[in-house]
Amino acid sequence: MASQLLARRPPGAASSSRSDFAGVVDGLRRLSISQGAAGRAVMPVEMRRECQLTKKFSNNGNRVTFSGKRNKHVQRVNLQWHSVYWEKGQRMVKLRICAKALRTIRKKGLDAMAKEADIDLWKLPFKDCRPERRQYLAEHPMVVPAKKNPGPKKMKNPEKLAASKKTPLVGKYLDGRVVYVRAEPGQF
Image 1 (cartoon, helix red, strand yellow):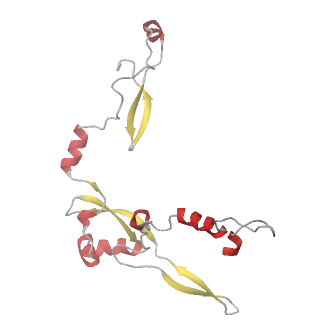
Image 2 (image 1 turned 120 degrees about the vertical axis):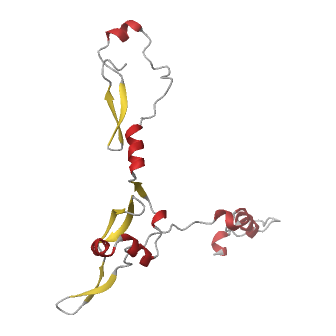
Image 3 (image 1 turned 135 degrees about the horizontal axis):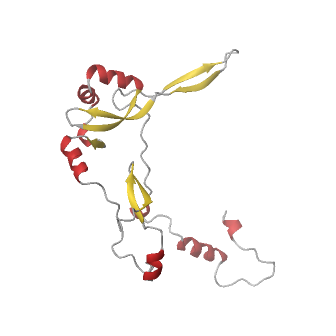
C-alpha cells in the first residue's frame, strides 16, 4: 500500500531532503479519522412486525417443492392500523393489530387486552370523542390561516377592481384538507 502511494523517481534523479513518505504522512494527518461522539451516526429504530395486543409475529417456514427442495417462506401476520374506540378514555386509539385481535377485543374488551399486553392507552395517538370536544369544535369551526396584509400583489386600481367579475379565493377545510374556493359576491 505504502509503495503505491510513493511517487517513483526516475533513476539518477536527485533525492530531496524531505522523504517521499513524509508527503503521504502529511496527507493522512489532515484526515480526521475519529473526532469522538460528535459525528456518531444514529441508527433508526424500526418497529417489529408484531401485533401490539396479542404479540403475534412472523413465522419462519419452508415451502417444500415436489422434488423436496426447501425454500424459505415467511408467514406474516395480517397487521392493520386500526382506530379502536376506548370507552374509558372516550377516544379513538390508534393501534397496529392483527385481524384476530379485533375479534378478541369484541370478546374480552380493549382495557383487558391492553393490560395483558402492558400497553398504556393514554400514551397512544388518539382522536378525541368526548361530547365537550365535539361541542367545542361545532362552536369554533376551523379557519384557514391567511395573511392580514395582502402585500404588493393586491389589485390597487379601483376601476379594474369594480369591473372584475371574479371574487377572491377563500381557503376552507374539506375533510381535513385546505381547499380554495371562490367567495360569494356578498361576502367581500
